[in-house]
Amino acid sequence: MDYRNILALAFWILSVGYTWNSIQTANAFPTGPNVSMGSNPIEQSYKYCNGMTNSSVLSNTASQTLIVTDIVVIGGTIEILIDGNVLMMADSHIALNTGLRIDSGATLSCTDVGGNPRVTVVGYYTHT
Image (cartoon, rainbow, N blue to C red):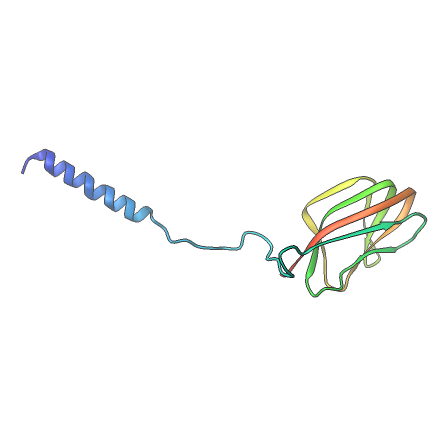
């Protein structure tokens, strides 16, 4: 047998072996929150917080956790509270990249700090 045939056969075996080892089975790991409650479980709420103290903006009455992704405040400044505990102050758009967790039964509320604030809260339901 010629050395070129041996080298070609060795290269072919090496190629098949490399290809065989590079093939992996498909695995489907969850890469984000598992969404329930239908195909569009988005929750949105609006509140005019002018002159109010601890006024409910959003009550999570569902059995799933609510993840708040955006808070938009127009016309003033507010304190954002969860179950009466001050979480933050806001006077503009807040994009919460990791989200703000509102557990089942909890209430997100606002307190007027100044101006004539209006607040919009947007989020989605998930199960943990």
